[in-house]
Image 1 (tube, rainbow, N blue to C red):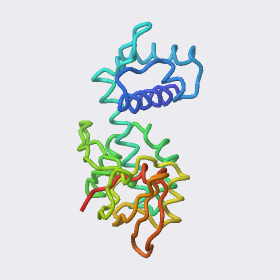
Image 2 (spheres, rainbow, N blue to C red):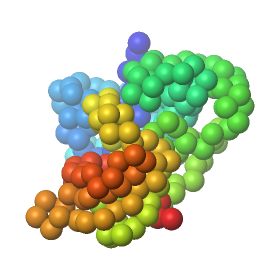
Image 3 (cartoon, rainbow, N blue to C red):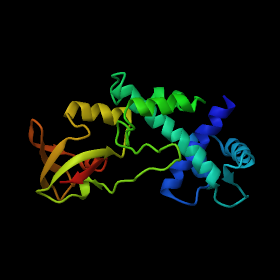
Length: 218
């Protein structure tokens, strides 16, 4: 359990680092939903393992060792999600919590075999890139649907939000990765977008939704 907790903190630090190089104890505490003394105790342990650089009153920084360790956790999580969907038939809205448990398994051969069986997928079911064994991955330059002008044709490639609630909403709307969308009109007042896709003609997506869909212009 102690190792799992450390790995969860490390993963949280990695994702916080994607947004800012200056991570405070407060930032980490809010993400982990714990008190500052609890965070303070944990970052000292992560520092002792060589995963982060920690000095009083200075931002937390991942070391190269910490980044590589974090990327392996992310790799196992995303491979697990893809395996659950592609091989075992789970819905994309069902897999996160299961993958949260699988990502802590210490058996690299298991995940390498998953990878091989699926033909080495580059992304998970939500379009997020899957790091390779060395922690490397390609980061596509997709746009948000909200950034696309009127009268454009795009394909949904990834999601900024993979929460269960949002995925269930997309299921209800018939939206998934690979869906081709044509944009028609952008409402100046609230930035909602009138679009067409599949069997949906002239339907409206809110700005909240269009800000969560990553698309490729075709």
